[in-house]
Length: 295
Ligand code: ARG
Image: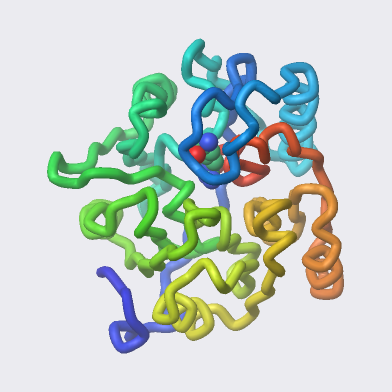
């Protein structure tokens, strides 16, 4: 079931079956992380500026923050000449089915620079007993959990399209995973993945940058989600506020300095953990992009 307009909506969140929260995290070691090509506007002018030692330290703190929340982190080795592989949100879309089966859909990256990352991540899933699914040949691109975001605790997927992922990917995904997909159209190249402008924090709360969406998409967000927190352009674009990760519906891991968003989060009872991901912002990614939540 694919929903693109509010007229297509015939359910509320309460009608959607629940799904357990992810229990683990997958990250890719930052050894080969760098900015050497430009495939999103954030990368422009940052070629050759990544400080490797600083990046490793920041990555370690992200890893430790997930571990401190009780989520064990598995690490896949990075690969030479795949400088964006560290963004582990992009190569796959995992889930746990209703009968407790672990399942993953592998991505089809848009940029040739990133296509070779996918088999390395697939190998990890294979070794760890996941059932692997591939998208049909006629589906051009799909960038995993960068664009397809699980609604916290629900068998419901939010699917971004228009910049990186093809809308046709969601028809197959909806069928194979047997879940409704709310499709959201992205309209601003600075917010090129859904996870740059939408974060689902708990089953009732989203953090969004509203100007990154078409009007229909914004209507869908407001119709389905009772509590929508908005980031301003500075915090969303420069500090990737919406790329925060809230794996347990309470603790929010977010780039340091998103003061306006943090004030709203704290007022609503979320616990904010500020992290420095500035080396990764140079490539157009922050906390959410740097890991995959898995079951
Ligand atoms: N340089 C990477 C790219 O443009 C960054 C990916 C960040 N990941 C994300 N989920 N937004 O593909």
